[in-house]
Image (cartoon, rainbow, N blue to C red):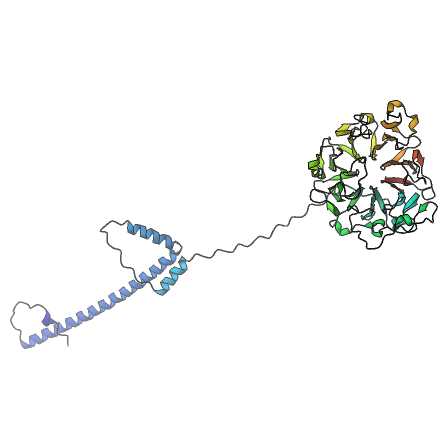
Length: 574
């Protein structure tokens, strides 16, 4: 039965009552219509509900899609939305109420709002630069040598060890500790009271006085020393039964190989009074020891007058690379200064500049400036350099010779100021007296100089009063000398050839000289109080005289070195 809903509707106009049968039919029809209407309404309601559910689902999906699509700009969108809302026209319809977010929506938005983590930067591996290949510009000598020594050995400068008979050696003696079969020396440099030698396998040997680090190695010895004056001689030519020497100083010993960087190849060594240097095959220079401000006419003992090795170090006890020197081809030493020439023919000087031997003015308050190698007033294309104790030389490829430094005895070959104890040549100056002489080697002592020409002449000039020239002084013309107030020849200012031989090599000590002739013989002259001339006497040798004893007779001598009171000769090993 249909629900009684018709009674609640508005009354229709009064009509004639139907018959009972007709009324029954009418009622049935109405009931059927109402039932159909109710079913239709229910169906429509169900359809509408399904449609509404579908719309809601679509809205939710759309909202989620919108959130996901615009996640990266959520903050920006909110800001823009707020701005637009604030500026809306009054009276505009309010936006529809937002649906409350579910926890899933919040998670989606939160995930979208969170910035994506940045990718961690992977550090790039450092680029390993290959070291530049070493460019070899110098070659080491290869000829093995026999070494002979003579003169004063009380400080171990002869390198004969601490055995007896090593103090004073009157004539050249073979140094068995440097035998070519065992050691193989290829070059020797004589300093004031120490020596440096290079071996065929690249080792650097040193011996002698190590007071200021000149040996470049530790020579500490705890053994006792015996007074050498108490030693008795058992040899007619030599003295000393017990030298009392420090064996680590008096015995030729190699500087430890790790004192130089791995791969270092030494090609030349040089020695000053208290300093030593080693040149490498690629043109670098290592040094050790110290420089002192010695007074030219006085002997300075101990640590007096020390300037330093460089601006940071007073005494350098092990080899140290000298900054500012590259592509060097040769090093020469004076007492307390050094010269180096590079492959362009440029010259660098460093050390003590007290007598202007550096070619540039060094004032006392800035004396440390002299410890840094620097170029100075010389042209390029210098062929070779040489040093005296306090003066210097450079020979240009054109043949010009430049001299500078102490000039009290005309040791530079320049007459300016000669005879005055304080005379100096401030800057490199052409030595006119050597014009057209073709000088190929030049060196000096305290106040005299030797030079060798391509023709083999051994030229000498400078101080005369200690027989430093090797010439008969009384035969020299007055026009070539300066005499003292007692009319004695004191200075030879004209370069003069020593007669009797053709020189292949020359060397100068403080006041004695050595020349090796083209027959392999040694000639010596000058001061001999300590037997440094090798002539077997402590009397001075006035003129150049051949050194002749059983040790060197018949040997082919080729080089020499002259220290303060000793000498070294080398001969080609058979």
